[in-house]
Image 1 (cartoon, rainbow, N blue to C red):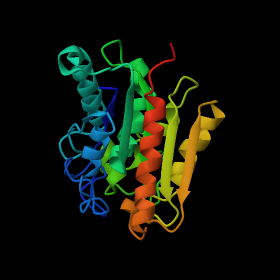
Image 2 (tube, rainbow, N blue to C red):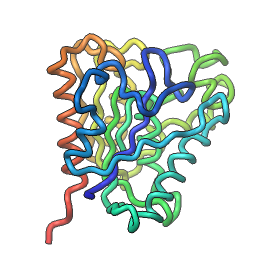
Image 3 (cartoon, one colour):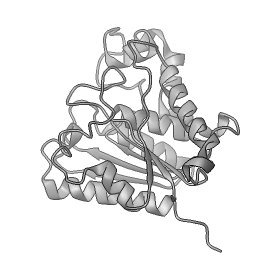
Length: 245
């Protein structure tokens, strides 16, 4: 197997946000796909892991990213018996899953030798800066507040720590950032913020703003959904290609 793609996805519009979700549900844009997106990744030569994590009703940040880090470490330790090449790991997630994929990709190097290096990250319509949400940061009932355990305005340090943009360094892996221009749940500015921070640090960041797309690719033609998936697959192939001899 060439690499691993980790993907955690919300269950539907307005859901997910580290609050609810079904990890086996690829979302409404993909439910009719035969084969489905995970199977397509496997057919392309990837080993696919779709781990669960504690939701915000069970534990607050950083529990979620700690759980995913532990999953990476578990797979790394068992890579020989599972036939995995953990030196070529790509993280890929949408919405809440994209937020956590980005957060783990940007902090994995600080989590010790048990966690393998991440060679690329794909995010779809992901929150990236929880200090700049669309909703009132003083509101203690938003998804951001539930994730950090209180209103972001009252917990700026934890909210900052839960925001991928504030973990960007020059040694971050390449990113592909896809975000719909009409996203009314996670504004596209969130994708722009992440791409800008990566580029400022000298990290390759391919930002694609998808015209007319809402959250979960609602409003997007089937051909355009296919294109988003193909772009992400090609990027993952590039990031997980074996080193030249």
